[in-house]
Every structure is written in C-alpha cells, then in structure tokens.
Image 1 (cartoon, rainbow, N blue to C red):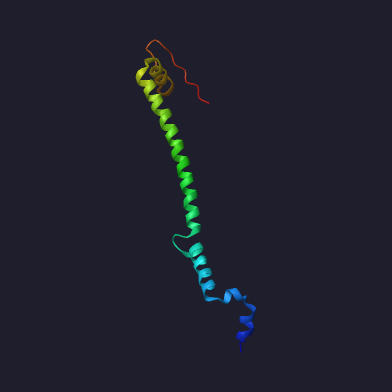
Image 2 (cartoon, one colour):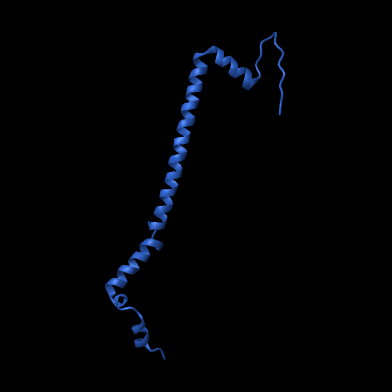
Length: 101
C-alpha cells in the first residue's frame, strides 16, 4: 500500500499550497498548451520580423523598377539600349552577334 504521508512530506511546503499550485499550473498552461501561448507568440513575432524584412526588400525593388520605368519612358536612348540588350533589336543596316556563355 502507498504511504501518502511519506510522499506528501517529500513535496516542498510551498508546492502543497493550493494557490501556488494553481498559479503554477496556470503558468504552465499559458506557456505551453494554450492557442495563444508564449511559444506561439514568439514564433509569430519571428515570422512578422521576417515578413517585414521581405516587405522592405520588395519596396526597394519596386522603387528601383519604377525608376527604371520612368527612365525608359522619358529617355529614348535608354529605351533603345534596353531593347537592344534584352530583346535583341537592331537597326536594318547592323549585324548582331549573340554570344552565350
């Protein structure tokens, strides 16, 4: 038979208090098991930081692209250079040699 008094005497006195035990169980529940636990909160914060970094990178890319578009619409020389480099356009009296790596 189990001797409950020996087991009870091995538990520290402050853990035998029902209020401390309830607070401890509540803390464990909030930290680990709840849908809005501290662990999921930290993971969401890390995801948010990553998404904000990606958003900043996309904004920089958008600014660079809009600058390039503005340059292409306002400057005919840059438009001609872009068409020659990216689409292989050439004038009628020119010969074009495409060198691939």
